[in-house]
Amino acid sequence: MKDTILKKVDELREQIISDIIEVVRIESVEGEPETGMPFGRGINNCLNKALEIAYKLGFQVKNLDGYAGYAQLGKGDDYIGVIGHLDVVPVGDGWIKPPFSGYIKEGRIYSRGILDNKGPIMSCLYALYACKECQVVFNKPIRIIFGTNEETGMKDIEYYLQNERPPLMGWTPDCKYPVVYGERGRAKLKILGDQAALNEFFNFVTKYFLKSKNTGDRLGIDYFDNEFGKMQIREYGLSMEKDRCVFDFVLSYPASTTVSQIMSQIKSKMPEDLSLVLVHNYDPVKFNKDCFLVRKLKEAYEEVTAFDGTPVTTTGGTYAKSMPNIVPFGPSFPGQKGIGHNPNEWMDIEDIIMNTKIYALSFIKLAGEDCE
Image (cartoon, rainbow, N blue to C red; front, side, top):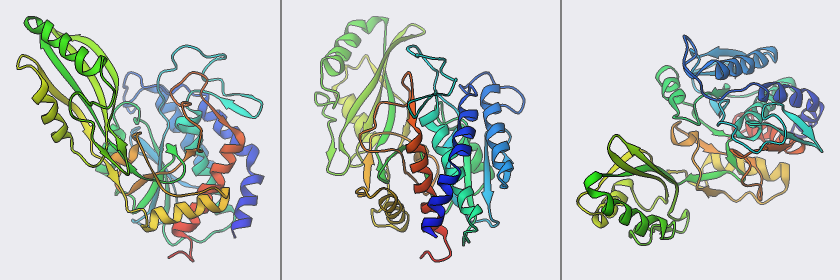
């Protein structure tokens, strides 16, 4: 069955690439909400197109009021779920060609969203389609979920979970390989100082952030553990909020600490005239490296690629922080960094096909009739 599935993916190559290009050509940056379009017309158009393609491929489809949608194979309440997103970050400057042109050069597709995350979630859809065409029998329904608000708040998942059960298990194709068993916590904080405390504000920010390592060593928050590594502070921002100066920053913190512990330590260094505010926080996510889900995804990756599939952790943040029972899995291979969110975002066609094969075998490993 494995060889049959991999061959089927190769046969679908042109169709996979054609449909992915059709989806990436839709500008799906968050816009003004409209009736039935909570994140704007562009994202709504992209969601409708993805569901249209899924319907054409013979899946059951459902649109959850513009917040998300899904394609499903099989019936039942308990399902294997894969979730990716169709919304993209703003394009920015530096593009060689129009950012939503989906143009191909030397076997590589360039477009905003091709890697993050339209190409990978469409690969998952076609992986399931290959299984369907090969008449694979699954012991559970499998659902491909199309998110629409991953980049700007994850309100799509909030709405989804108010209306649908979470998956029994699954993955998000929005990170890297091998399978990621743990994500660091991620918190956004801000320091505020009013006009009477400007000196204290700028002295504190300069000493403890701008002239310090991004590990927070001077603050005493350079926490470390062997699995997740050391604290990282990034995404500095300086602004005005009414009559107060604001310095905001993002913490990518290991599972050996908590956001409460971090805030308490920062406050111990701050002048009394300044205040510290937690904007939002996502706790770390961690799975047992030998659990069924992680083990089977590792097997699928190794069998298709012949690469080492030892599970890893990540400093990034994905839907795994909001959707229960989900691990990050692909699409970037070792050594591929700094592509998403940047100008001339790209994905190699060969990698798209390789992803599709890995995901197809993963479905069989998790829910095939002979799986554990």
